[in-house]
Length: 219
Image 1 (tube, helix red, strand yellow):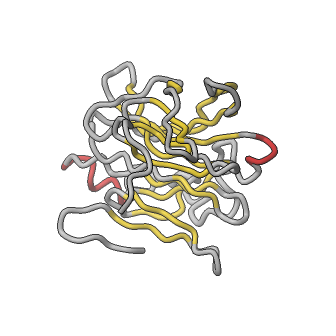
Image 2 (tube, rainbow, N blue to C red; image 1 turned 60 degrees about the horizontal axis):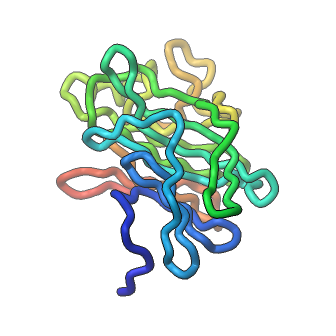
């Protein structure tokens, strides 16, 4: 085992940039770029501010499939609402990784989990692009007894995998679109807290892993 970089504050996710530097999220609310020499660059604060209590914070990050030409990033974060509840949200922006101090501009929030919940647990938050450009997003069931059963409720985002377009709208072909009472973003449901997701290159299938205390389930 070899140490690649030191001094990161609760790193949660990473992506290799085209030049092989590593973009890292810190759960406390900052992005860092790790150079090929292992040197950790200055923090780039996330915007909007993140809810960093419990399991929340700045979470996953993904590069747009056309990142090499458009520099667009997508990231997930826990967001505090005015009523004291919190939710998982997805934002996107343009990364300027050149120079001594990288910056992220043109930030917009493209999705917010509904309903928000008074919990600091089980945000899910993995994002991954499918070969057709669909953005998959995993969402936890927020871990409280009264919220767990909502993973089976198609009228909520809790405990779901969503299929989104790049602007956060429901992706074409989602299986529950058009069903009365169902949210059109839903791709699959009945999940606990998916925190691993990957596309199988040979088939384009989405694989996810449930995060749980008594063994994990791979789907």
